[in-house]
Image (cartoon, rainbow over all chains, first blue to last red; front, side):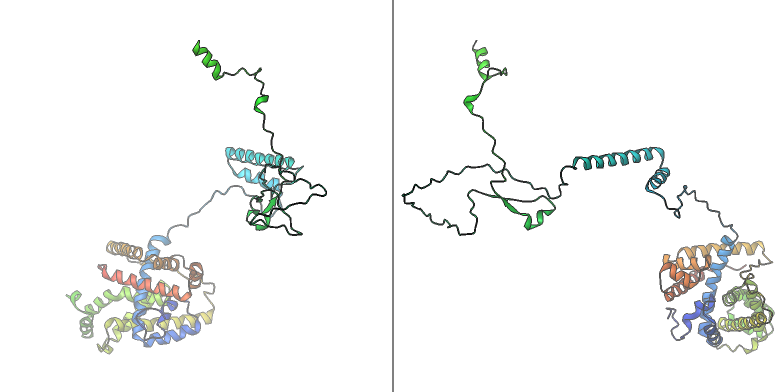
Length: 233
Length: 192
């Protein structure tokens, strides 16, 4: 139902449909019969018709005589989509649509990208691609003092400290501090990737040079003692 | 001074064989009756014939006007009946001769034979008013008016284009035309 202020007539919502000839044959006859009897609908129809005619007249006066403009859109040359084209032809066609500097830049970018990809593949031919590279912490190999082997006949005395756990059979005993090592991302969030690395996996500790084994015969760098000698005269 | 008289007074004068009084009625209402006929028939030449016959019928039936209804309603009813008569006549003629099958004669615009400078000025002013009135419509209403009157789309096409229910499209057009009518009546063009 249209909001036309004429809710008494059930056919009032068909005024616009009838006026534009879009009401249908059966409804048209019904509406015409109603229109001939209903003065309210007749007045309503007259009101709407007057407005419509004003717009129609305006359209006719100002626009109807104007020629339809011929619109030409300068589309660039396009590739026939119907044909099956290869990758190289598609790239050529794409580059052909670009201006020359942009095309050169795009071609260079593609070449650089392909080169980097090739280098990457060659460089990783010997080793698997590091998806889950393990970052291992370097744990200094702290040597534990060797436990004296009891001589036969000697009675071994075991001093049990308070809080010290007695190793149980079937369980490994860590002889030195262990650290938790995580796999690199994206597997870092997976708790199963967190595991302990024992001393066997740790790299050997670098040797610390002895201070007294330094030979300064070949060292010509400026020293503090030389400065004192010069100042002192 | 017939121009200051009401429609009812003019009818009374016309009943008393005052031809000028009826001429004033015609002058006041010819455009509106023509618009009504155009709304019913959809063609200017048919609407012109219907309006002509409606005024002739009104003149012949002046004595039947009892003053119970307004003169406008009385004229509207006469015009509607004339249009219905013309439509039935056209339908019968079409069935007899099968002419105008392809609709090629639809929307034949017949220019008014008498276009005096005063008429042209009046027409220009009216067009300005319509342009302003259409421009002042809310965008959603104006959109439907343009699609219907300028692009000659059907309600179904507008509904599909705007993705709106059919009833909403009709309602918007109806509201738009009512608002246009109100705006145009507020600033009537003085008929010369």
